[in-house]
Length: 319
Image 1 (cartoon, helix red, strand yellow):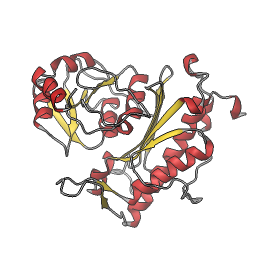
Image 2 (spheres, rainbow, N blue to C red; image 1 turned 180 degrees about the vertical axis):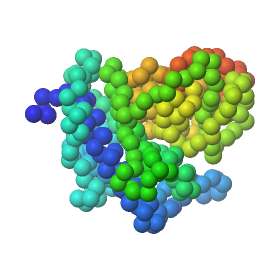
Image 3 (cartoon, helix red, strand yellow; image 1 turned 90 degrees about the horizontal axis):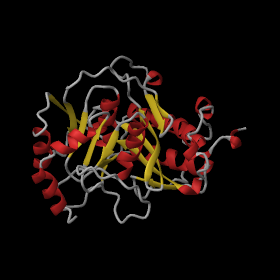
Image 4 (cartoon, helix red, strand yellow; image 1 turned 30 degrees about the vertical axis):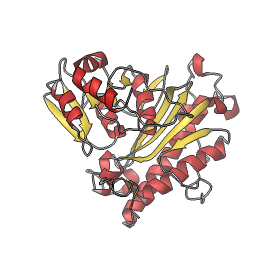
């Protein structure tokens, strides 16, 4: 009986099944060609922050399904004003991934209850790139925090394999991890010692970001969309550091990513090396001092951030 399985394992098992369904929903909406794009950015800001029907439907699927299975969960979703009760049978997921239910839960997470955690949801991370046809940049993120720290995460990449297959049913992959147990669904390639390939923003480049990366003298820089995809590049061994010396990412962008990175020995902090505190009651969910993430040598990346960038960002954020 699944009731004897620790809550955190059941939650991750459900989240994997739900993320897979959300990915299918996203692919179906793209196939229909009716993205229903709206701009969420403030009038006169000069920015373009798109939201699509894929974002809206995927969030209804994720949050609605989680609340059906775990009614006492506290959930923070990126998309505001989405009614999670507007859930047809095509979006409702009540199943769990049975293979995950058999894993041994880390002892320190054994007694966690639904009301103890916060779930952070980004239904389509990398929406802008998704609307531009850069499909592999899009990910579905479901992160779980406990006492302000990420403890579990799911990253689903709906269009993984789209360059080699036109069959939508064959696309996609799902990574998941629990801190203290490990992470699954990917294989990291051997990384040469001393290699410096950095991944950063494609659409929100600033002078601070440029200066921080230049100080590291990388052999190449991969500019891509979405925190989820950047962390996939780290996990797959295609990049060594994720550097974003600017506010912009939110906690729903980083919670799942950080949980999976930490489950395999990596690290994600702000550019000063401070831990991200995932606080449900925070005034803002903005990662105000940016992001530095790596599978190895995280401290080196922090040390290489110029003081002018670090101090300048603190001053801009009044920290």
